[in-house]
Length: 382
Image (cartoon, rainbow, N blue to C red):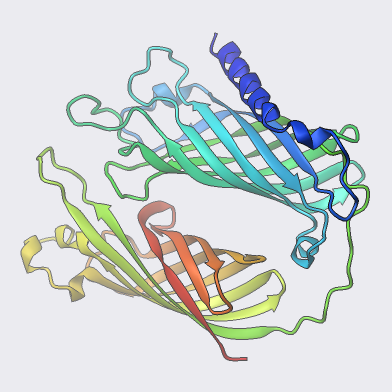
């Protein structure tokens, strides 16, 4: 019953996309102005990885999800598209049925909107091997509540981050029709803005079909790239955030301020990649409740701070930079956050020197610590 319901919802979603795109298949555009839009429908299924104390039985059955996408196949008219082997990008809608039990009143079914970027690794004949990244926002109707929903210990907020990452194999069946399959991870989390927050992680397969509305790219544009010279710069980043301490069944909300300041040495070795080394000064107000033997009001600002260092990688797509850092603390007053951390997110370049910054800092590598909202400034040194 649920499978037929999901299929019906997928059909109606794709039909809705087609309803608003009638002009794409009418008159062909001149070659120099032609774009290559496509629609795509995907089905996801797989298993859960969770630290939930109460939901292991509910999560023992495979989940199912459907999604519909609208996007563009890029043809290389800009050099950055050529550097990235002519990727795809666009937006979509994702609906997940996390629990197969129709009487479920604990977890609910998240609905997500997202942007996606599909980067080819290699093309061989009609086949393309590509990574596919989707990032957006998800809405969940059922969340943790001490009185009405105490067993949901994975999601505590209605609006959450949606992240989906897959390695896909695509087959172009005809000039317009393609099919795809792949394997990857889907993640829902609010970055500890509200607690309890263990997040939902799905590992599984996806199967899909795509349709090129204006036909295929007959030939990708190739231009001789200009000579690239490696560069070095210093990047300074400041970001703020907020977290909630784990509730203790009282009506008091324990909300705390966080901030991050980093200084990075950045060596850009190619048009699409850079390696970094950096230092961090981190502040977490919730550590006032984490230092054993000390009342929260006696914990000083210095004791709520970490000093750390990290190594990282920047993946550069035109104005957008995807970043990943892995670091360790060399000064801390509490070991509540473990001994190492990761940072994953992105920066958008507004000017030659100024970037917007959005990332998640984790504790012990994979558990969300806080979301960083901030800006970065780059100072070229060579």
